[in-house]
Each structure stands twice: as C-alpha cells, then as structure tokens.
Length: 314
Image (cartoon, rainbow, N blue to C red; front, top):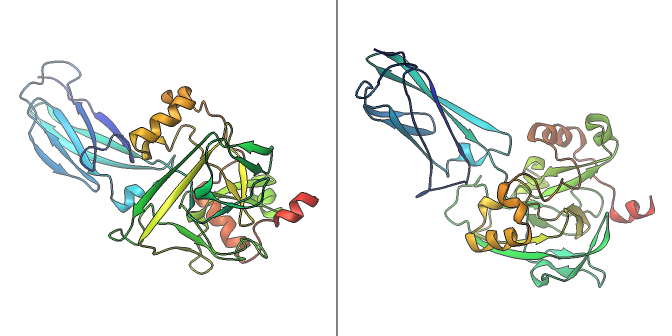
C-alpha cells in the first residue's frame, strides 16, 4: 500500500479551447508504491468545472471557457478549485488553477485616428500608413487587422461587449464625441492623482475598469467590429481627442486571434512565439483592476486627463 500525494493542474482563459472548454489532465500517484486500480473512479463537480478520474488516478478537468467568472479574469487574476479524491491508500486532492488573460485592446469602426494628414477613420488605415503618436511623433503602422463580433446572443456583461466613453466624460471635450472601445482598451490617465496613488505622471487603465454606469458604460450594441493597429513599439495615440493605446501583443492577447491573424503577427515578431514579452514593455504602466477602481472613485467626474492641446503646450 502506498501513500497518496496531491496533484495540480492549470488552464488559462481563452487558451487551448476545445469545443468551448478549457481542459487540463494529469495523473495523481502515490509517493511510493503502485496505485493502479486503487483510486475511486467517477465525476466530481466543482464550482467552475468537472473532474473525471479513473481507477488508476488519471484525471481530466473540463470547464466552460465562456463562464462570466472566467471571462471576468484579467492577466494575473486566478480562480482555484480543489477536488477531494479517494483511494485504498487514503485521501488526497487535485487542485486546479484557472488563470486569467487580457482581451486584445482595439478601436471600433468609425473611430477617427489622428494622423499627419488629419483625422482618418480607423477602418481606412492600412499597414504602412502614418499615424501621430504622443511619444514618438509620426510612426508607420506595421500591421492592421479587424474582427466582427456578433453580440446579439451575448450576456450584458460579455467580455467582448464594447465600452462607450461618452463625449466629455474624461475631460472637457474629451472625447470629442461618444467613442466605443473594447473592454480592455487602455486609456491614458494623468494628473496629480496618478502621481499621488501610483507614483507615475501617467498610467494606463482598461476602459471596463473605468465604467461608472453613467458617462462610461458597457454598451448594448448587437454587433461590433474591432480594429487593431500594431506598431514596432507600443504607442500612445489620439482618437477623437481621447489618448489611449495601440495594440499590445506582448505576452498576452494573441490567443484571442484566429490562427491566420495570429500567424501574421508572429511572422512580424517571431520572438512572441515563446510569449516572453519580446515585443517590449507597455508605453506606460498599466493599472490593475483595483487600482483603476480607486482612481475612478476619487477622480470621476473630475477630468482624468489633460486635453491633448494642453499636453502639447506643457
């Protein structure tokens, strides 16, 4: 008779999805001795998924990737559930960690992007076109992509439902008109609060973390088309006067793309195949959800950023 040892496994939101499910597998063993045929087989139901184990201790964990609790996770967030399993040698556990992953930041059709030739709709921009950036002036787009998403059957808090940033909600005249962005599209925030709470003159916060239910809201559109602009480095852009980010693929985000688009990006940045952050750092530090929530509560409805014309004069 042996002594059972614990087993662990992990899955990551939107990664390796099979038939809509996240799947992990393993084999729980004894510290010493043969455990073949010793385990109690069956299906164990957890909070987020189910664990199936056979008499030899081989287990498979399956969880529906579309669950709101899983889709609400950001990079660095985790969920954990523990399954108690039994054998003739005693009891043990299989612990599953569900890791979060940020969705790609993107603009929506009709958004006007500042370029050296005046504002242009994001859907008209192509690889090689010039765009004005806050830090590096005129920069050429390295890759541009888009994806249409049908939200008619999605839940109100679906992860891909856009956030509406209403005119003047960030600062006077910023944005110049209502603007739709993806939930994880990060908006630049500056001012004394950023320095006071985070020791930075400027930070980036995801749009969904700034939702206040009045001037910044999750929108109930039935369909949305998202557009991505990729540069050789992560950039800060101006769209409708709102200062926010370009697409950032480093380490996260690529798994949400279809294979053709993902391979196109990886051809440009082959170092991203190992997901070691080869694309470089974000242009500004990115606030975690609780940090952005603090900033939203202490600043809104006060301006979160200076208008672009004030920034240029500074």
